[in-house]
Amino acid sequence: MRHVAISEMLSWERFYRANFINTLSGFKSVSLIGTSNNEGNSNLAIFSNIVHIGADPALIGFVNRPREAAPHTLSNIEATGSYTINHVHADILDAAHQTSAKYPIDESEFEAVGLTPDFREGVTAPFVKESRIQYAMELSEVIPIQTNGTYFVIGKLISVYFDESTLSDDGFLDISKAGSLTSLGLDAYYETTMMKRLRYAKFKREE
Image (cartoon, rainbow, N blue to C red):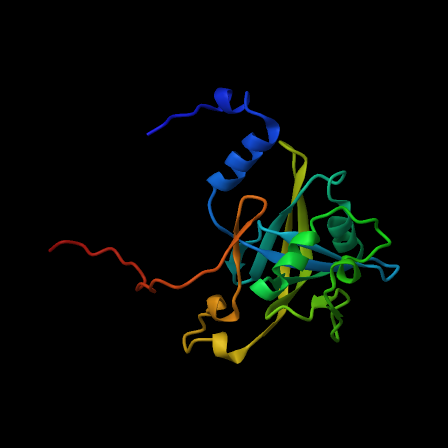
């Protein structure tokens, strides 16, 4: 087994090193975050670092890059307190990936990549109409990460839209039935299939 220390990684070419480190943490969910600013301009951006924080209260977080690199999503959320998260499936993958390009603030990624903003009552941010699992979020807090200038954005779950066929009797949402994709690194995407579900693990004391 090869061993690589961080000192060696730092000597690698920038994009080679980035690819290596970005793939190291493994497969991640991939979703589109929809926002609008106070002027009504819509923004859409792909994220692969969305994480479950807790179920009661229902909290979900994501990491936003430094403001100078990715300012629109975070500033819109801070201004309105509202955003949506939308799963990506194969039919919209190319369009979803294209949202990672840096568009001007007055140009909507929805229009640029050919996806449809879908506004629903009680949510100021747009959903992605083509997405098969969509949920609305309300901003709870933004935590600056001093080490690298990123931000951990925590939101409260408000509502969810999904196909009834993905929901199991015990509340398990089988997102693979919706074709939800996963990602690795910055530009690789994968389909998923369930191996099996295991029982809740309990410690068994020997008699």
